[in-house]
Length: 126
Image (cartoon, rainbow, N blue to C red):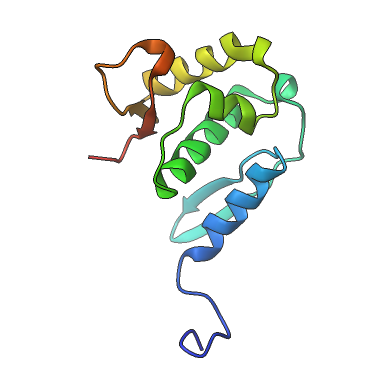
């Protein structure tokens, strides 16, 4: 079915769904694997200020992963734009990034760069 164009390749649907949610500034899905089954929860969309800490961290990791898969890196600016926030919210995003790094979800792509120009990759990148 894949060869004749009637269905996509394995694993492409999640990437497309997460990317579509990101484009409309929606909350990233929460994906859990429990006892061999996968559960996906699509949270009700809320403004950044009303999101829980877990939802913000999940969106940060999803954005960082999508950036990496698109051959570029997450920055403070790209994450702020992902949430649809204005430039005066840079400090909020910086705090979120610090929290995500501290929890091991993302890491600096190059530890040598200044904090202002730092780029980030998902934790699983070598």
